Image (cartoon, rainbow, N blue to C red; front, side, top):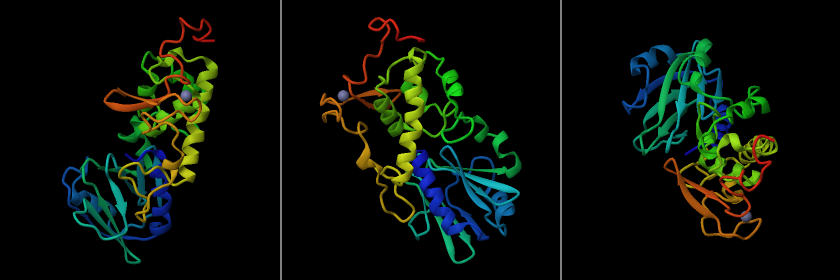
Length: 281
Ligand SMILES: [Zn+2]
């Protein structure tokens, strides 16, 4: 599933190709794609309009056509491409002979139409939590979110609390911060929370610089894989030796998702009987 770095990589490539062109035609081939409008509504609102900018909020791509914005979420297998494909879920024809198609084998991608001026106030964007690289991603806001009994890994995946992080980068950030994924969020000490807060942005920035991670289906706009899979230290490495301590990496399930961690250098899931200073120092 594309996470923040993969969506940001696509946003940058799409911007280069499409910004400033006008939408000439729009065709929807997957009825489940559009969440809050009809194909006719989309055509009325967007066809003939200039694509002013392509933005991103968490894992949403924002196609800003002036008065209205289309929000695309790629979910599991969605992939926008400028090349002709079989069974596109939508086709957008732009001026300058550019055609944007959406490939989506699992058919879970979504499209919303919202008034641009109120996009942040309306669902789905209004439901998103604080986001790395945005002004609201402060240590104080992050600490406030951690005041929860939820397991820290599950909390990192909750888009209503922190937006943009998915399974890969949650595993990597916890490994880099030496925090067990099953720790209760409120049990993190101030210094552990600080490490995690900083590692999240550091790892996401590295992944953006490497054009994202291609573990399964994700590809950059041209069809090439990203490069960050070569820098993963824990994700998808069950049974391999930890890069820090050589202990075998373990895979467990948390909320139906695979979690990868080092049972030695990421410590214990219940730290406070072992370390009296572990809680709230
Ligand atoms: Zn280790």
